[in-house]
Image: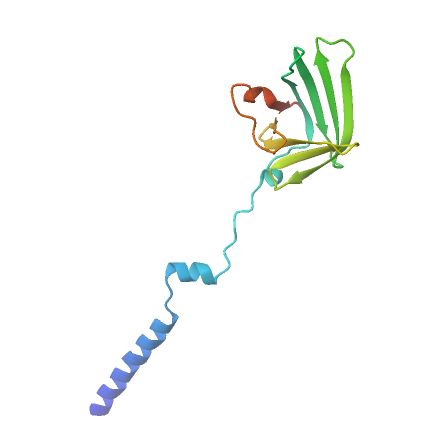
Length: 147
């Protein structure tokens, strides 16, 4: 009987030691295992290639009618027509890339860059520091996808 009690006590102790050695808190389990991060970016989820149009603000004219075509081959065409100024239409061509999965960077043939925030069905022009334009004029800096 004494042997049976000793065996039972040793079994219980062994079970407790083995469970205690492997028990981890939730934080330890999360730290020790690889947690897949949510890598969804605008670039991945939005169909951003296509044609965008809008009229951007202009300091000395009625506005700048703008058409930006973002092509499949990482090229773009930007047509800017200065409204109220006859014959002032400019066409820029170049390449583009996506930065941080969120910002469309267009670079013309001279190396000048412009920045746009990828959004659902539109592009919002960003300032030179890649920040959203703020204030009451902000909605005027959005190009809407038409194709």
